[in-house]
Image 1 (cartoon, rainbow, N blue to C red):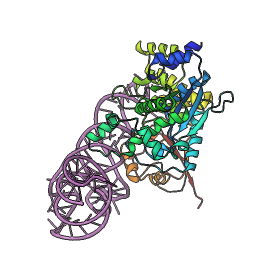
Image 2: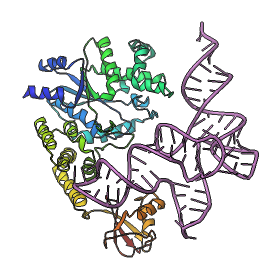
Image 3: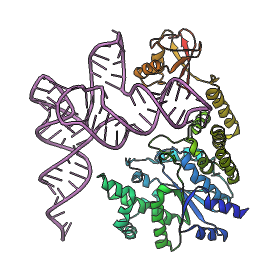
Image 4: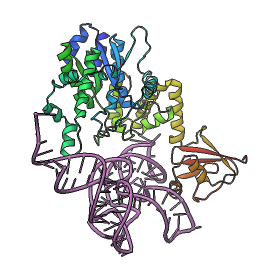
Length: 405
RNA sequence: GCGUCGGUGGCGGAGUGGUCAAUCGCACUUGACUGUAAAUCAAGCGCCUUCGGGCUACGCAGGUUCGAAUCCUGCCCGGCGCACCA
């Protein structure tokens, strides 16, 4: 049982283990309790399915009784991770961080029990040690790395090649992140493959200051196998937020490319690998990807919203998209009698502008559910009695006229 | 500091006096189709419009011109090269 769990830790969603899988396996089998951590960026409270992979893995360590730490990168956030080129430095107030952290706990709390009394999860803030780091110490840390090694890094190399700015302080970023491992007395860090460089910097520093081996597990990123694009990207807004309401979360999972189904099962759910193998086989043998993707969507919604909500989301999806029925619950807006439908929708911010409304109507994308027709007149003013409108496939609005002033 | 190149829509990236609200790719929206909000195909993608057009936009501020994203001046920001380097 224990061995099985260890095997899963060492393989599922794992890209690479440094220094080696065998070395980590040996330590895990020895029964030694490790200090394992994952870093989070507190600049926003946005956590998506891609992040969840790391926490699911962290959970596995937690279940084996290892000490689990969530590191809040409140100090490094003010520098801006060079891995993310939109390096707008954000000045975070303590309040922002706290708020984001609370939201984070709510979302990831569904994966790991943060309030487990038997094995409490530690939350640490790197400003505690980084904000007070003096230049002497920083110089000492920096002396562990050569400039050559820094500029070898592809984000840096690419930016130099493209003539994009590259600031000196960006070199500090991996150093600081690496020093976190020292301050935490970490034995193991988990992060996406995009964090490899930063996490490896920590290995060097831990060896230097603590004279021990820090293990690093990089986890696979969800990618579109066709384009190689990251499936979950904060900047592209393609990720599936863990804050999504059940119907939305379900639908967004359904919108993922068919080719990613198996990987999502592996990385975003706790469905046993044996079952995942079954699913893989089923797909290979011509199983309907839609049905299998529905299982996936169901599993994911279940994780974050519970069984009831998963059922409801599934039902909603089937009704709305498979059978194209009108949902029971829809957004309602109240408007004075006689107002143009388009104006009402714009002022309710359901549509960004009148031009957009015009395009939607001209493109045949607006339907009057009350009588089953497609609205073709942009100046339609059917606001005398309640009107149900469908815009595109997934926006439903009920317009309620009120004669009140 | 000097020289030089550049700053364009959500992003990447064309355009270098008029036909530019700005080629194209990505993202996004809508439609068709379907097995799904997949894939594929089609259309759209600044704002307003009585559909004639109007308005605001190409780092910022001025200027030249009948007319500027495109030319000039100044400023701000960046790349590269040179210089400086106790």
